[in-house]
Length: 370
Image (tube, rainbow, N blue to C red; front, side, top):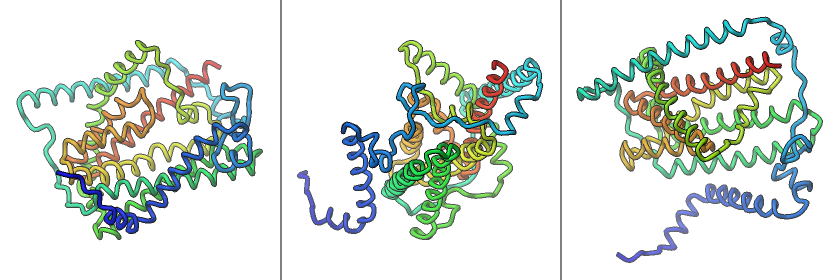
């Protein structure tokens, strides 16, 4: 069958979606300009490089790339907290006991699941049916274009603010995180707009159903506990593979934030973004919006796999790809089986909260070594 290149149809599509075409053009041109600017001598230190592309603002000989943020003084909360005397062996014993208890329960649940599987019993009965949705795969790309476009606009605004107030130490880490929170809320707002206004559907189409909320939360907690042994196994395999190839993963900025940040109020704000707002927005977008559109076109198995892989890839960490993909599969599986977004949100909050808890524990233990 010959391929028909219908130029008139393409022209109509561009005219119909001209706003998205303009935003996509801006994104492509910005990235092309960024690549060119990095190859021009002196561009990084120029006014345009600092104000538009957001190259590093401050220099420091202590870092390999020659740049660093200003040193921030420790606030009164951490000064008082560091003076508290809590016996380290007692803390480690309590934490170790809790971890072993949770993992033991997880292994017990995994054995029960395996036995049920061998006996060909249904592991998790479908609790609620998904409503028919009207949005399409193209709407996923539209939301992605809007989100990335706004991200670049916020980035330009951010670099201008930081360039204008180069001596305001509190702004250097707060404004990027403030922009993250605003962008998350905007993405959530656009999703609601697409569902409620553009397609005239209720939030129940996203799986935001609050019937049997307590049961769904309890089911989510048990599911995550059962998932933890598998997660640890995957992590161990990934670490072993990384050791074989002598791969040293780069330090994640979020880890450095929770381990080194000295302002208590900023840690509270950052924890709220990472543990609460982030999981809600990601679940609404990946599981409720994107997965439903993909499932409508390609069916459950393919949509599950694609959603989990893209979810892991967008986190931008090579060593964490497989663990995050496994988590993504659990999240979409729970959403598909329960018909509600509450279990997925609960699991995501539990997971992020556990990771942040580990970082705070590491920070506390590092305090004893100083």
